[in-house]
Length: 279
View (tube, rainbow, N blue to C red):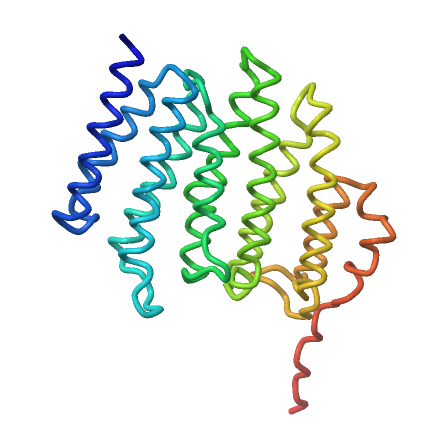
């Protein structure tokens, strides 16, 4: 009976999504449609039904991208950004729902959503919002769940996938993110989360995986020229390379002295302050 009910619910929601696609712009139907999709996904009790429910949500995300972000390279409206972030946060909420029979499905949908576009079609500031409002909070909550996890192996596996998501998404959007004046804050927050995952209690898997993930991120950023600037970042007296080196030295000392990374920390010294002309 439960399976028949879930199938009927999926069919009804699929019809509703199809009807709304022809009846009105998505931003008009999303406030009512999205909560129904979330409720349906949370009610699923088998992996197959969960995957189907998340698939409907992924279709809505794809339609949102096509409808509003594809128009002539124009920056998306504030309304579109709010809708898009609502969808991303919806995927995140399902990733964190321990009652869900298949948390991999929303995590995969989220990964596809944040890796969509090659090159990325949205402005860097929009992707920064995606990190700040979806990806970073997701990792924070996964880490919090680890403390009281009843299925440690499953939670640890999801945490590893979360770290992989952070790394892939950050590097995928790196060239655009580097253009932001606040990039160093975004990068320092990513490093902070990686350090917290590295120090997750009783997790050998993360203790091994996080340094390798960090090393790969540093190498790619170095190759992209991220650490070459001699400019001081924000209100600090340091370059991005120096800030990064200080964090990595504390977080993962074995990486700091790695021959593969040694050159990164010496590529950029702060530019000298302008000389003051004598009176």
